Length: 130
Image (cartoon, rainbow, N blue to C red):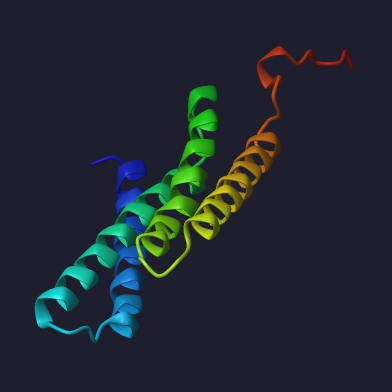
């Protein structure tokens, strides 16, 4: 197993445990079956978010990986938002507003990281003569 995959799996396990422990705070529903399903979905969402965080933290090997980090930021922000939006007690207009803010913030985070990692035209930069 390569070190890149191992690091991503470590991130996945760490954030997955955080999701499991946070699910303990929200457990206490009407039945044990619903509690187990809620804890499993929170743990799975945490593992997925951890894997994506591991992809973001690692140094990209190509320009394609730099572009993919924008999508990774989108997924990391939108996974918990979809969990909140699944609740029936939120009006539809507020759900759309929350989703729009989440998309905007995650795009901003992704582009900021993309620019800090090398800019838009990093392959076309000309080295100045010494």
